[in-house]
Image (cartoon, helix red, strand yellow):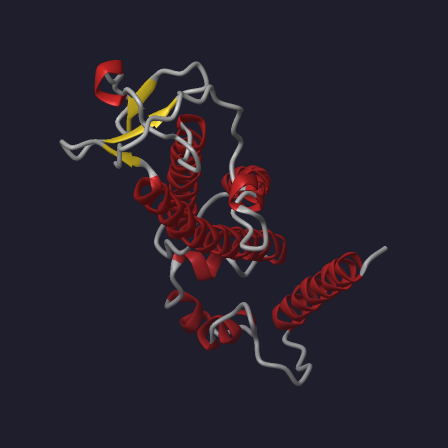
Length: 256
């Protein structure tokens, strides 16, 4: 077991202990027991209400009234904690995507700089079958590229692999953003003080957040696979999948 695994186990155990303390504090608050800690679940008015102050109870909003139930409060705070954790994971993944997208775009720019440039300004790449395509994937008449020296030029496969990585990253980013928006909607539901969620709704949100968390882990794995191809310690030829190409004969006196 490595350091990361041990840390995860310790952090998980600490989180469970914190939740149990919260639950115990809430029950103590309901009983009016002073444990020397600030009340984490009940407002001062709610605390007065559970101590028999009917006037204070009338001033509570619907969510505070719902939180007077220890069972409800435990589930509510479990879902609230889960929402925060899931949102933090999504934010971290978004930061990784932004950083990686910058690297991919930089690599694309470098590849275009190294590509053959035709007199009309088009950037072109040779496919493994010997055909030549522009940077926007249009075939080039062989007459226009006859005799070009393709040595040390980026290949069509290498360039296309970069574009594919960029497209995949954008798809991951879009899904990550959608998941973040959904968590925000759930958070709004949780913070609706006039129309508190039912126990069943809380349970439903809990399951949905867990599903989003699992999906975020899957997206992290996909990002990690792309990150490996842009490791600065790797050679450029290892940065993206490519295949061998058919090299056209060299011609003297041509310079593109």
